[in-house]
Amino acid sequence: MAKKVFVSGCYDLLHSGHVEFFRQAAEYGDLYVGIGSDETILHYKNHKTLYNEKERLFMVKAIRYVKDAYINAGSGIMDFIPTVDFLKPDILVVNEDGASEEKRRFCEERGMEYIVLKRDPHEGLEAHSSTSLKEQICTIPTRLDLAGTWIDQPYVSCFAPGWAITVSLVPTFEVRERCGLSTSTRNMIKRIWPLKLPDMDPEMLARLVFCFENHPEREDGIVSGAQDAIGICVPGLCRHYYDNHFWPEKIETCNDEDILQWLENHLVMIPIEPRRPGCSVVEGKDITELKVKALAAAADRCWDAIMNKDLQAFAEAYRDSFNAQTAMFPAMIQGCVQSYIDKYKDKVLAYKMPGAGGGGYLACVVEDAETFAKEYVEAIKLTIRRSEM
Image (tube, rainbow, N blue to C red; front, side, top):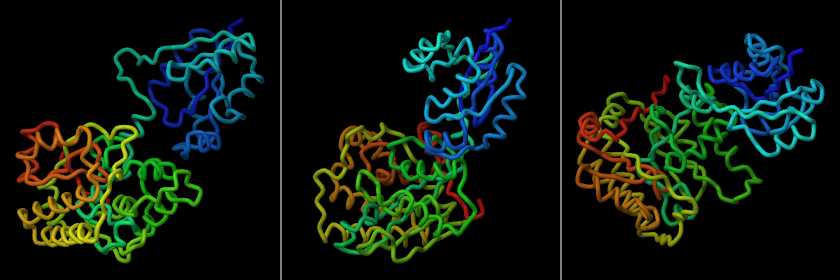
């Protein structure tokens, strides 16, 4: 009589790696699969499933290596315990990523064999993971702030009001964590809508995202600036006016195709090292009325230059906005940042750190993005999200 073999997982985005894992596990006996419930995944992984549990159960059962499959009735990382107690398998198989001492002890207590498989792709196929696949098909935008950064915080705009300017970007590149592209807000969005934004009014959507991220029980007590939610959710080029409040008094957008193309032709990003853990970009801040007014004035000139497609004026205002930011928050360019600035400053018209700085990218104004990207292969050309996308 064949031994009973058990594996467990979410299988929310079924791929060839899962099938190969099932094939290898089935070599030890009849394979039974436990599947994480929608509720378990929502509470344990903090996001909704792409496919509901009934769909995932159907797909897993249809794989020829699988004898039968069940929705796990438990919760958390060990949600399969009720399924194991029901099936009484002889062997528990896990992959390297899912191995743990807790699972090993669990098997010892129940007299089960514990087998750990390497995460190897089937011969001739590429390795896949659900996380990497989701990132490849995720269309949730990110944002790049062009000028006026920090003025969306009341402790800055209380000195003088002004505009923050952002563009919503199509994620045509890997959106890296801790790199100034509002990945914390983007990750919050992915907890509700894992792959794409809902089709609704962009400003209302930005309000919902802002409120979700800044819920009353937020443990760190920090209120994220509204420019992140607005920059992600509102397509095209956008400016938002702050006057001692977290939410702007007014929002203006530009979706003129000539202007958006012009911006794409003159903006690139250069990856640098991420912001290091423990980095505090507000350490040593020096905020004064004069410095905030300089930031606001630079943002005004930046918007006007973009509207007029005046490259030199744009570069000057862009540079002045960043200088005004770093005058108030000198820690924005601590650590590795200055060495990258020194490397590229004579090759571009202007540069800045996206977001709060401390690492991530140099966002640069250049003569021609296409030419620059050919000469510097590390440079990333940008695609601004249009309203019809």
